Amino acid sequence: MRIRALDSIRGLLLLQMTLDHFGRPISYYLYQCFGFFSAAEGFFFLSGFVGMLAATSKQAKDPSQSWMRSRALRIWKYHCITLISLCIIAAWFLPTIAGNFKHIFQHPLESILWSALLINTPEWLDVLPLYVVFLVLGSVLFPLLVKAKNKTQVFLLWLPSFIVWIGALFGLRDAVNSIFPSWIAHGDFDPFAWQFIYFTGAAVAAWWKHAKAESAAPDTADLGAGKSIRVVQKLTPTVIAALAFCFLWSHQFIPLQLPVDFWTNKVHVGPLRFANFFCFVMCIGWIIRTSPAALDFKVTNLIGRHSLDVYTAHIVLIYFWFATPGSIRYHSPWNVLVPIAACVLLWTLSRIREPRK
Image (cartoon, rainbow, N blue to C red; front, side, top):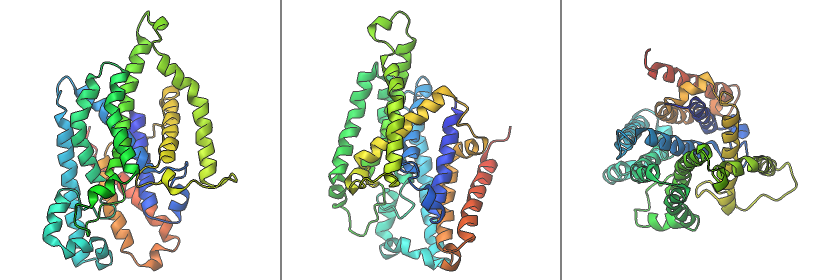
């Protein structure tokens, strides 16, 4: 059973990322509009959270979570077809975007191998490969999270992800990438860092399941059952205040020097960036708990249900946009109307992909 609010949020995030990627002037107002984090964090976290909910519901019929490997294969096919198509378009029809694939053209045979293995990921083609990897890893971790007997076991299963993220903050990715050819494009997302957001989403879903079970258990109030939920509820005002502070700080509405890059870096998910984002997650969770229909929007719900098709199509649209002359791309009304038209096209694609009732 799908949670409509989560599909709606996913759709909102997809539209925000699309508008962000089209660039200014819209991205000036949308990118990291809530603080030191972007829509990408929400997209990865939500994928882990929803994936864990799906794993829990499918556990009885599919204890090995083979659906995750099937999903990973499907995303891998989407990625490869998109990459090959864009390379052909760049080589034969749109040479203005060929620079994004110059390493592939310079090393065609090696590129086939490294691209198929999801090591070489040109710009805007670096997100789907992460999902493939995370789903494959998730097919191992999620069954363990489903079987976890309490919140402590959930924490211990989540802990390795946290440790890897700490390594990412101190150069783990660079050390690993040094073994590959220097011409490879590794993308803008550190997989050792962004896995932390994905698996934290999964761990929160598993943790919340146990917290709700404790709260609903009869005759256990004296044993502290439900304490976790009460603590979260009591923290909500503090979390909202922290979120407001980070919003004001990030947009320099208060006379406080911005933090150094380490704390808010996007590639490696800086500590303050993650903390700010998690406060946002807690606020969204509070809204969904208190008013489930508040974040349920029909238009974005439809888009969220077809996230893979929409995200893949948006990549192609972005490349076409960056192939247009600067006289159009950098001037109004085109740099406002075209991004909006792209969102309408993505919604239309979702309507087409929606099964007939």
